[in-house]
Image 1 (cartoon, rainbow, N blue to C red):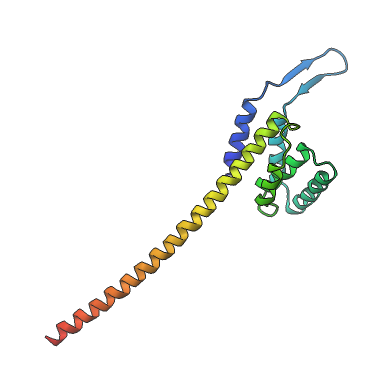
Image 2: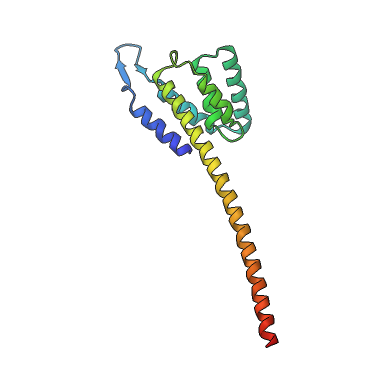
Length: 167
């Protein structure tokens, strides 16, 4: 799923406006304008590589940032960590609530696209989890049925052997 997220983020980056690089003469070497999509990709990539203690500090910091200023950027930073961060900080139900509460009028195009993508990924993961649970239940029923049929076959074999011994 992380590969899917990285691939989709890469596609989102590819669809963005090109990066503008301006060279000026004198003491200012280069000015660069980067769309938000690059920020979100870098943000996610940096966070998933953090050690556990820093990851917990990052989560606490993002929660505080969101409580102080619940704007689309802080909301999405927290939702991204909760939705697709490492398992120790992952809380997809909470991330989904944050994503559904995103003010799309204030959010940038790439933030809206990322929010939609995260909602879709969470939905697919929930569907997959439900489907796996359903298939496991069916497999368990099938295993129980197989055991019952094997038991009945063993009983029939025993009966057949006893009949053959009588003859």
